[in-house]
Length: 238
Image (cartoon, rainbow, N blue to C red; front, top):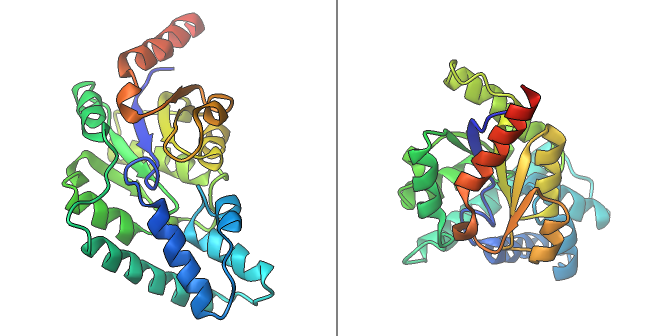
């Protein structure tokens, strides 16, 4: 086992936009004459795709969710998200992200985004934050029929990384995931990856119980120490 790639969640790891998403999901429900619940949002939506979140919220309220109806709501919400970001002079990118990206680049490790967010939302943020060139691969909510905590997004990322970098020959165990929610950590672990939990959305102690490493902020992640752990496991296996 050698560290060969680093896979980032998006909302809650790259951009601090959960409050925006909660507001927009609530607006979707209100527009459909349904009552939102902040507690329910936290329970159902954090760490999961908009598709999964909205579907569950509607079903709990007795709505029949057809594919065309759901796609209409998702498109409306995505458009509102773009409009909200356009109002911001500066995107709320998490402190320490650029320094961590620099460390990963120095280590010559490919990076990818694995998120339940729509591709258009991820690309919009990465382009505007001038980070797009660092993430050569995005696995977004559009690519999957399931959401975290299912491992499918992470497994697809490994498959596509190997296609993009034929010499990489990575297994899931060779990849490090960076997550901020229990659902995301579970997804990466079920895929067979080591996980860093960053306490941007949930308390440190909650992530510490679930992840291989837990940090209060991205700047606390010591990539050298993580790499040494991978190397020591590989040495013992050898």
